[in-house]
Image (cartoon, rainbow, N blue to C red):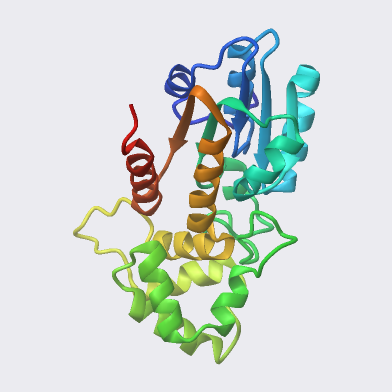
Length: 264
């Protein structure tokens, strides 16, 4: 496995997905390729995997790292909301399993060019696919305080949403907020950690999450991707989803409950 990239819950993912020799699997979020590689190993000698990622850098990196699997691995630069169109065209019109590992990869968090994380810093872009949509800095520069507060509440469940939104609008009258460091520092000034309370996350975490979700339309994409995956599954096929916050979790649970209704 590549140094610096450890996939989440790899044993549990493989046990639940249960890829078998000869099966067709989809890794809808290739990221660093850790899960992809384990699925290929479990499906040896002839199982195949379609790997998707909206991030072209991830696709290129994994293509080089897993080149030894040859045509058993098919990679496509695409958001998983495009699964219904991309999978049949790649020879995966009916599959035995699909994995969605939501959120960011460790490589994206460490990328200083796109500002996904306040620790790595960098320009506030946050787009998985830099050829589409608008960067996070543009949202900060153009949305009203009301719109920003609504965004932080809806996608970040941020309790200080209004206070932070007002501070952003006031700050941009002097200079645009264009880097992750600038935004994180502003939020830390507005909503500093209480020294008497052991805080588990940085004060800027929820705002960064909200911006990333909004920029990439992640929740809409998740609903579309799950629906497409179900349509592609063969009888007995499996979908595995790793989610990291309550917004994604709710969508997945509601979706599975709806699909299970009336199922024998």
